Structure formats: structure tokens, C-alpha cells
Image (cartoon, rainbow, N blue to C red):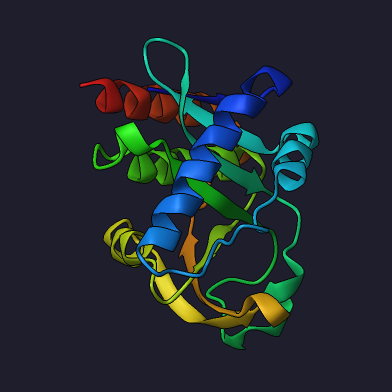
Length: 191
């Protein structure tokens, strides 16, 4: 598995992955994602922003998608609770795995690779939010070191449970070590 930035050529496949996830959530009675959110326009804007990522298998086709951004999330300023770290963070939004690839650890792999992206951006942590009924994320996040920090509100879209994971501190000269760790993570995902 490799993680790479999504391109305009990935847009149709990414939209398919998002649509499948929206349908699965609706079928299970979940309301985090709806017919309106996330929209195709939002996904296309994610891709244009340069912060959209896909995880691809050996065939090169996208099997999972996420937005990994260093832009501050406005909803996070109003947390009911407390973040672990002050300062610069990255956020993961819109994580989705292709229907025929679920249950293979791709969500976990995407979240672990997001740590490399965030570290390269100089972030101190990664923040993520999820709905109270998103069992997969509520199980995954604590298992990979995320701590629940409180609740954030998205207005009419509802409240979400907020999590954060502090990233290891790294010196300026650690670029080679980060690259080596990334290569090891990618190797581990293949085996």
C-alpha cells in the first residue's frame, strides 16, 4: 500500500468511495454523512487543495481516501473539553475505505500514514472528530493512541466526539529518519 496525494484523475474513484460510505452509513441508520454531505463539490475542492490523499494497492487504484490538512478547523476552537496540545496541528477529515476493501486495515493504515504527513508539515498533533455512532472510528482511534478530548459542534450538522494524538517531537535533522520510518510503515502494510 502506498499513500499519495489525490489528483483530478482520482476524482471519480474517490467519489465512488465516498458514495459507498454514505450509503453504508445510511443503511446502518447513521447520520454523520448525508445525501448532501460530503458533496461532490467538496471532494473536488479537497483534491484541488492539495491536501487530499489516497491509499493505493499494487494496481494503483485508490482503495481509501482522506483529507489530511494543516488548516485550522474552525469548529475545534469551540471544543467543549480540552485539547492535549496547543499550537500547530493537522486534521483528518472524510476518511473512507472502498466497500470491497473494508475490514483489511486500510483505515488504520491511512491514519498511521497521516502521522507522517503531519510530522512533515511540522504539526505537534493530529486531531479528528467523529459521530457518536461511528463504531469503526470509535474503536480505531483509541487503539492507535488517540485520546478523547471533548465534543465539537458543526451547527446544524450536529456534535462530534473530538480526539487528538500528540506526535513525537522531532528535531530539524530527523528528515532521513522520518523517511526511513515511512518506508518501514509502507513495507509493513504490504506484508
